[in-house]
Length: 243
Ligand code: GLP
Image 1 (cartoon, rainbow, N blue to C red):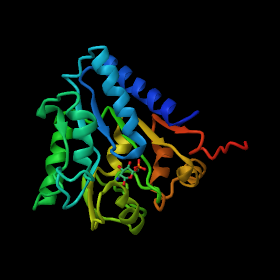
Image 2 (image 1 turned 135 degrees about the horizontal axis):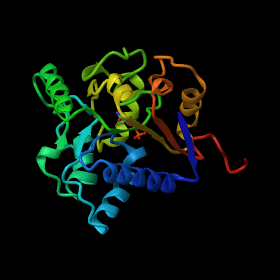
Image 3 (image 1 turned 180 degrees about the vertical axis):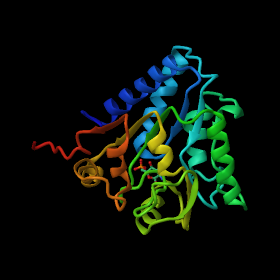
Image 4 (image 1 turned 135 degrees about the vertical axis):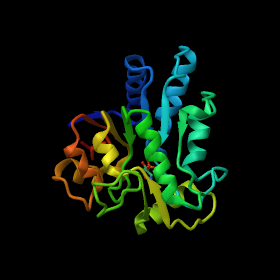
């Protein structure tokens, strides 16, 4: 495990965007799995700018969405799909064949999981995975106590996730279940990056970095990954201006 502490959110975002570009140049048909959320948003915006400015060919890349709220349509600005449309898919005019996301509105979520697993398998697995960390230590919607043996699965959301998740929505929204790539995908990804910024993440980052694998803090699974970078800013590392 490699840990890099960047000065601030901007430098962290810039650095991870550069790593994504490097990945694309090394393997033009890379399969990315990406988390939505505040931690990763600026990184994708910087990535888009660099791709457009430098005419980087991403036509062979695929982008897999890590998770989705069950029952929330892509038209809802709080959905993960909306986030990706806005920050990546539309600005890069991606072809539908490059985009792999869960349909949280499906009335057969089991089939939705099977479809996701089939597609990732067909594409040869995940080359580069970017995850955030929830306030309760979740990765994707792999909530505390989850099994590490799952590929795609549906899960009841933890109370912390239900309440913290409100930040993405314009109006109070009932968030009960999530559909997510499981931790098995995280462990099998060839390269993984865990991103976190801000003082509010300092406590969970400390627990994640210090502890051994404890499934009550799913992010501690990073200790079992062969090639993972923890990319955080000083605030998430617990550094205060007084330090
Ligand atoms: C959310 C999402 C994750 C995300 C994490 C952190 O609930 N399910 O995919 O990475 O929690 O979110 P944020 O970056 O907004 O803090």
